[in-house]
Image (cartoon, rainbow over all chains, first blue to last red; front, side, top):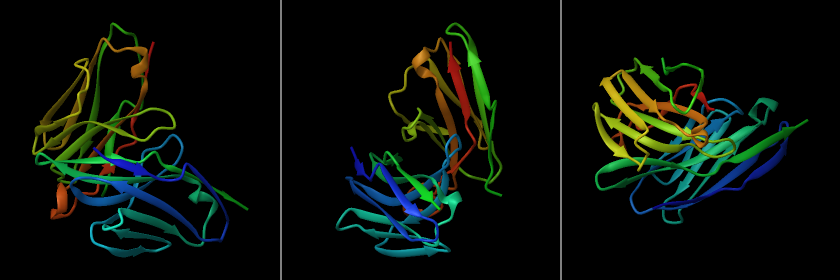
Length: 112
Length: 116
């Protein structure tokens, strides 16, 4: 099984930087994903980390430490449209099959 | 093109009805997924097809029956559902699975299902 933990809600100011943390426990780690989901819409893929370190993609960066079971998503130059839920998801391999399990998501509110 | 399409967008059905949800992708992806998402909850995996074979069935009740007619299509057949099955049903696809790369999943817009 897996245990994925992330904060339930966060609030940040437009133009600022926000870091959303995720901790996980898994038996067969095969990568960590971050997704963005606006209310009433489908999740959208943001980033993928399988090796330790930082992956940068425009205003969004994601970091992974496998030894600590820890990841964060960093959002820079926040915009109002970044208000959404951010889902941390871990790919686990067990009995030869791959399964993506989502955390409960962090609802980010960006305020003027 | 990273588009996954789903039909219908909305579906209202009674507990005695039989209906089907459809999903399609033309990205050449070899893995396709069904998820169920209740309000304010994360998506929960229901089924995984890899190379058109069912590889994961997460103990889903038999009133949900998946079908993968070919590598581009995925169906979910619904029969004798309960009101608690009302949810957003999401289809996703990925190029592959595991560390080989291309394992990120792309989601369709979902079908919002209401069971009355």
